[in-house]
Length: 241
Length: 251
Image (cartoon, rainbow over all chains, first blue to last red; front, side, top):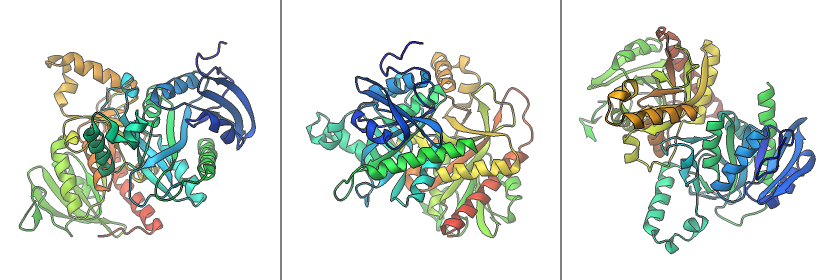
């Protein structure tokens, strides 16, 4: 069997469950929390490790920043046998009272990006799998972590968010940001909406768990990784029940 | 907007409805649904909005019809929230998009395609119409109890009934047919006319909404009993889960 063009993975290389950070540098750190993790492949921004949790194969693959590279990652991982994609990463926050390192559990995402429109008309919702949301909520509550459950914002421009005044259309960016807040969005990142929409087309499951930037210093990613790993463990238990 | 202290269209005021409300489209379905409540009473009728209130497990619950379409459904949910309601289950019938669904199967809705005009008056189109996770889980638990055959997924919320059923008649026939195919590829389960606006507005108002639809496949439709029983059981499940969490179940 030939390896997938970008991720350099093939059937048997990855588990059904894949944790997906944006940053390739975070892959070995997350993989160290799996049992018997081994390095599978590195190509471009795609780094893959596979290990196990509760005796079930689980992989970690980086997506790189943004929806274009994320779409490629899940397409090729699906062809390699994965069907459950969980984004794990950092994000901005929308709602007052959010503290840095509070966890965001996404139920769906705002399609404020270009990639998912190459898959589905814009009216189609980017929605997370109900079982994944349920597993994350159970895991995060068990760990006693501060968290919010709600809609994520997936954007194409990092600096459009953090320095909107530099954009040629600052009013538009600021007005939209206000709209997402009014709508109840909880966090802002750059990959989830496409992961959700492409998963819907593939018949796969998608979810996202993020550590938010809010009030106070942003600490380490340890609690986020704890929450993500515990969520997969919980999901495996639910799938086996 | 109020007249005589009552909301302009639904003709309800605070105290007339419970926090938990079932939302059928058809005003004619309110009375039969209310018979599944304890001590139901008719509260108001105005235009397409009919409301009954009763109790379930001692907690006040209501049923209010939305009329057909997102424009009237948006008015219903806005005014019901002003009366103190905060948890909504849309209940109704729908067409099938996935070809393997048979008539009578239930679709528990976790998100909706915004193929309508109303929700754009509330939020830019990129924003997803997402059901509340607690309502979805309550409906899944309810379907297990009533024994209803069900699956969970996406609905298409459209503005034109005949655009779906007789697309070839329309000036935009090609567009309608191609988009229907897109929703099928995307895995959407069913097609109805109210959920997307209810979900988007519920997100903005920080209230909870979900939906359960009986799907019309190729066969004739069975009676709606199992749908209505599942929706009412869904209210019981969410009331029980709210009580467990210490969330107030009354206004």
